[in-house]
Length: 139
Image 1 (cartoon, rainbow, N blue to C red):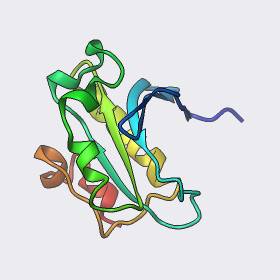
Image 2: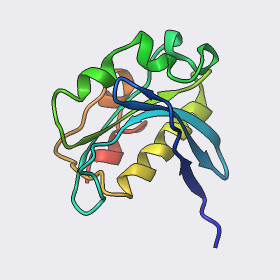
Image 3: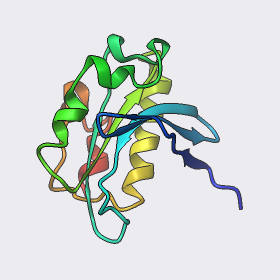
């Protein structure tokens, strides 16, 4: 049976992140993202998940990894919890498809061991509107 979604990990390193990953979703298309995954991560115990979505300066049309060069949210997040996966998503738009892709990649990682529901948060709509994404972490 073909999986609905999968990840193709890149190889370009930037400040501890792999900056050229691709999340593929059969229905929603591709999401470019950078990732920091601790060496100790093997999916056998719950890990925290931190996701950042940079603004215009980090959009994909500036190039893979631009999200890490212009905004340090993902880089700074590593300092708070050594057992946390950090994803920095890269889009070229801010629309309904982007929102659906964000939910899909979040669910993908939640299904693979990122279930520290006591450690979550986010800015703007993410932290304040359960209709958008807050329900993902309300288990």
